[in-house]
Length: 309
Image 1 (tube, rainbow, N blue to C red):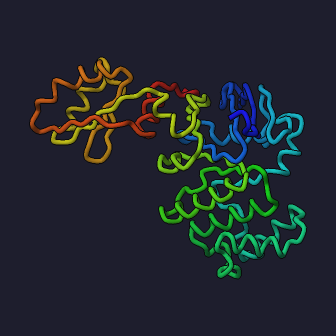
Image 2 (image 1 turned 180 degrees about the vertical axis):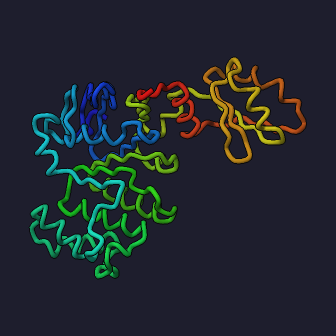
Image 3 (image 1 turned 90 degrees about the vertical axis):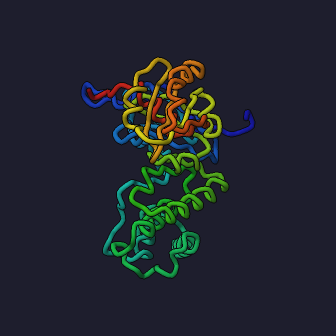
C-alpha cells in the first residue's frame, strides 16, 4: 500500500452553521483511482463533507490536501481539476445534448472542443440522441449526460452526489460500469449514497451519521471490522417476536427484511442466549447468517445521536 499515491489527505475537518456542527472532526485518506463511498442517511453531512474535502466549501477547522493542493489556501486550484455531478439535474432543459456539452466545454475553456464533445457522446452512448432536448430525457439518460458534462475537462477527481437517485436499476448498473472504467484510468471518485447495493460497488466506504464518521474501511473488510453477528428468523408472529427481543441482553438490533427478521449483536454468545428460548417454536425457522452492509448500517445508526436534536 505504501506505493499507492494518496490524492486526498485531510484531518479534523469541521463545518458549523450557527450553533450546529454539521461535520465534526472528519479525517480521510483516499488513494488515487479509488472509488470511495460515503454512506449515511439524508442530512447526515455527506455532501458537506465531500465539498470540504475538495475545496468547494471552506471548513471552520481542520486542514489537509487534495490533489496536492491545500484545501483551504488553494481551493481554486482544486476546483479546476474536479468534476462535480449534483443530485439534481442541473443542465439546460431547452438545449440539446450536444448543445449542453458544447456550452460546458466552452465554460471550461476546453481545447479541441468538437473532438472532446464527440468523444464524450460516444463513450456515454449519447451519439444517437445528440440532437434530443435534454429536458425530454428520462432519468437514466439525464444521468449519462451529467456524467459526460462533468468529465469534459478531464478532471483528476470526480464528485458524485447521490448520482442515481430516482433512476431505474438497469440504468444504475450501466452508470456504475462507466464509473469503474473511469477509475481504471486513474480518476479518483467520491460518491455519496444511501443505497446499500451501490455501496458494495465502492472500493472503500465511510459511514457518516449526524456529522460524525462512524467508521471507514475497505468495503470487503468493513463488516468484519465491526464484529457484528446476525441470525435470520422466518415464520409466523414476527412482529410479536421483534417486540420481545428488542432491548434484550445481547441483542443490539432487530430489523425486518421482507418476510424475515435479522437479529444482530456484538457478543455472539450473549446473542445466542437471548434467542435460544425461541428455537423450539415450531412456527419459527432460525439460521445464522453473515451480516451485510445493511445490518452494519442499522447497527451503527442505532447508537448515533442526532446533532440537530
